[in-house]
Amino acid sequence: MIKELFLAITLGSILGFGITGAFFALNKNKTSNQSSIQVSPTPTITNIQMSTQMTTTPAVSQTKTSTTITSPENNSVLSNAKISIKGDSKPNSLIIISTAAKTFNGKANSNGVFSINIELESGMNLIKINSIDSEDNQEEIELSLTYSTAKI
Picture 1 (cartoon, one colour):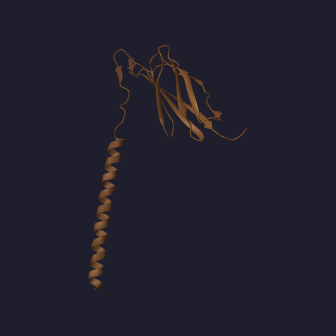
Picture 2 (cartoon, one colour):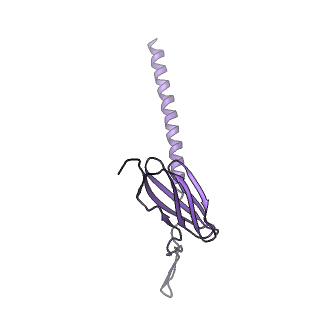
Picture 3 (tube, one colour):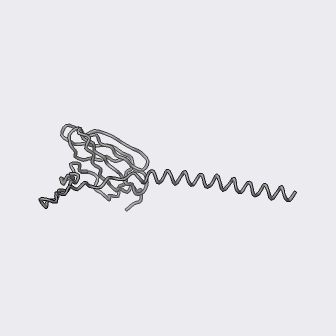
């Protein structure tokens, strides 16, 4: 009886360690495959004979963002849960406003002006406003608004 119990415990342990080891090995493979996806380094072309060096870097736009929020101001404390986000963007841009609980969308008019009604949750709300223009250029603005019913 003791031999069978000892044999059962030993075989169970070996089987359990084998399954656990296989599980961790597969998860390690998945994470190493995901982490092996890297952005390739910037190519550098060097001409030794002429002592010149050319470096190719991606073009980064130095222009201001074309989307601005006119109302409400960032870090505002509001006493009404239903508010309207107003701003300016490129004409006919798609505007997507995301809160922690919901997503709202709308469109800027031909002048680039938009006004989208949203509903805030109680407390601090981190709002992400994405603007996508007709050329698929995307801009993101973050806005922090606090909704409170307390009398100030």
